[in-house]
Image 1 (cartoon, rainbow, N blue to C red):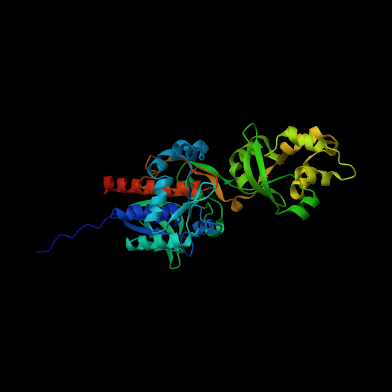
Image 2 (cartoon, helix red, strand yellow):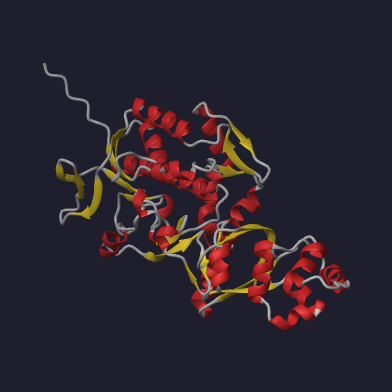
Length: 413
């Protein structure tokens, strides 16, 4: 007598081999679900590896309320993801891969060797041992008329009919690493609610620098400064002068409000405090000291330590008559106005804002318009500054989508 065959477990397709897709693959494979992961590049995790080139900043150690606030207007939607899998849980997960971590002086969390590659290798080994099948050079092209997935591959076009699908295709920046935003069109054609992709953690342009600023100071770091926007408390840090404007960590931290101000008003004026450690009255007193035959440049250097790019920027952005008035010059040193007129191109940005709106998904991160299709990672409509917040939310959303898929498959199996 023939024994009845055991039904095969559900099979899912994950499109995208970044942190979100890989985390979902881990959750699904642990639940006994067959996982095929497809990525358009020759290998997975390319942007993840690039992020680790200068030191793999995996997450941040700051207290949860401050951590959550980094997601600004999308904090309410990110909160349940972080409550389930936040910074501490992410560190424990990394330790489970045999990778130790440490907290840097800035509060950022890094693997002890500062590298992304060992972490990714250990993770991929675990996934393959769990049965996850990874298909590289496979690019998702959208859906066929019958609802199957259309994928290009080295062997030609394939049509896939998984029991559920996760889209984890990244944002719209760094197209050479696979995040090109091409997924927007097929989702738009299916009626999915999308916010336009915009640069985030990006540089900004000024109307024009003088020739001196470009030839002598492009690429120069502006260290130990503070930058304020509107009436907000100025942030301490550093940035970099570029041939077209400014970029760097301090600018990235303010990129969302600067970008929105430009959208609303056509420009945004930030104020640079060149000497954040000194009050304006002390600066004025130093400038008021007799300088004799010394030039103003030497006076600024000897009294306040202002020289190089800071001195050049002060000259660039301050009316000439201020240099004969210590009170006005002191105020300029504490709040030097710099008008920014546009973002640098999206493909240069570290990350992107916009994408699949949370309102287009249910609490499991499944698209309301497309039952059985889930989304995770940077292709969702949220943004955060650098410092580990981007990666943490990608991991957390991938895990949440994976759990959501497991639940959905149980109900619809």
